[in-house]
Image 1 (cartoon, one colour):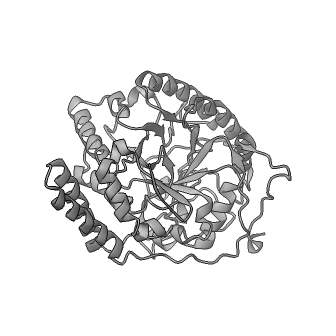
Image 2 (tube, helix red, strand yellow):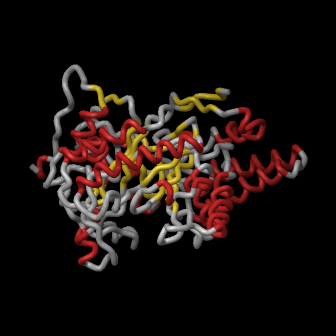
Image 3 (cartoon, helix red, strand yellow):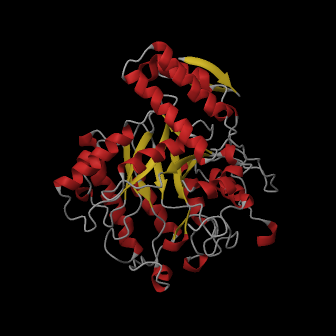
Length: 436
């Protein structure tokens, strides 16, 4: 049901999902800054609390079949708070970066993207360049620098990267990523900051979706089946040899609560479960848990095929995604295959940033090409979606961003494999003049 057009974008609701209340909420929300400003960001904590409180009161009123007047009143109050609570907008920062020239692809290729490099002045949650295995072509940057983000977006869309799966570190996002002039050229989706784990508080897992939902109406936010995509990391049983029934029940209860969230516009997120299993073995996943997600994927499998070299990791990734494809098909769960350009956290280990080390030696763009060729065939036929780990995970040597060591080699592999060559040829690989 199409109920309006804002800035050329249709606002569509499923009558089956939202019904009368979804329609009413959408009509009221049309006056909200969230419906008008691509870069509208959330307000202060008090504003958030009030908005979340009244959204939940509205849902409770409907559930308990309160009077029409009472329920409508709560919805109106909620809309007024969301539309008049001084939600700040972030001004676009003008850029000197040349305009992106996106290339076409039949695949939806994404990359995990970290917004916390050298941002200690913004937040204590930051990644230190001392642990980096490579040096980026842009130099050792601060992730909140909008010029850096603009270059990243330009390079990504010119090489077949359609979206970034981004850390939801809101202070850093507001300082940099969301202010980038080129943001409309790419889609983004959030990686939930609170992982699905036995030790995590249930309310934190659920409430973070409310926290993120203020961004879901951004036209740049990635949607599948008109639902905002949220990636949720899954953590359990450290040795992963066996998950006991209590632990399984705990995780299932939490993910079901998270799934029950529909938000102010009656929109249930498209939840992607992200496993992080050293070997990548499907048998170490939890099938019942996987079925609760709309799709599942893998962040990395650092020990796939053994400890070294990278060559064995290449063949192991192809095998593991074949295994995941068969298993997921039986469960009717779509998978999103992933590939990784390398893995080496030697410096982090030497600097005692972490107490373990995995060094997959001999990684190269040509071997990464072999891995991509092996895993792309397992992309779900409906989603046609793949993930790269990662754009800029420098501390683990998992990097496709242009570096002084490899230039654009990794991005060119992705471009040549997944995109359609324009009649005038691909855009040239250019870098800032002061980096040449």
